[in-house]
Length: 291
Image (cartoon, rainbow, N blue to C red; front, side, top):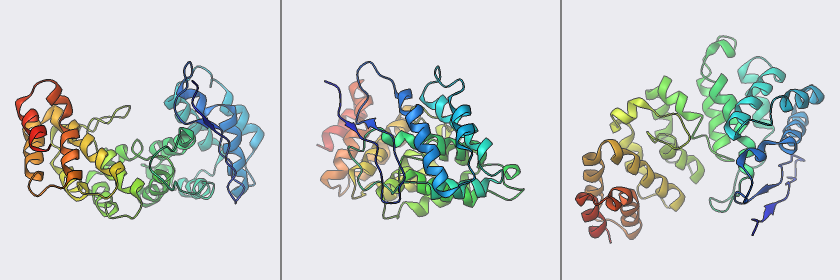
């Protein structure tokens, strides 16, 4: 059966979100999430806070060459259209984008696919938020961190945070470490998910593939997070590490077994499930001990 669709939302401030399925429907593709309806909602939301936006020009440029593009390519294409139609100074453009956002998500499960509406916003930060040349020569780091903080509360900044981890690993990790104590589980999850060395669909972080130790303090802090949404990300992150550094991952899991709660034991079992399926003895033993 087709999945239920969420209707286009109309928050109290008049912003709009396109209708979207809760899960991908049979015979459909993710790229339909960024189609003409999403473009209309994007223009509408931007014009609420930036009346100078040329909506007709934006729509025309947005649909040019759109049809064959996959979902990520559409996000990148629309980010370029945003660049053409918003103020040239990156900080000014981000301010408009953030003021156009709908309210943050209030739950971590069953949020549907409508959140992909914010993929162009994330792509905008990834493309233009690293270089001072896009920001009148000023360091864009703080503006970009503010943008990703707000975007991850509505979608996820796990894709856009990665170029910052590659360009500025120390200062980005320092900020993410601060965010591990944020009250919003979407923000805390970003700290683990965005730093995964082999995050699916995303650019790998070669330095963390080679040596994941800089990220381990984040995982330590989040291993007993009160939200399963966050703990599952920690488990998947450990699973990534186990692909390149199995001894490190297994030793960490063994240490975490000491005094482990039922929730942490689940995390450990989930983290080593793939090597366990391959018959790796250390992984099988960890799952047995974490039962």
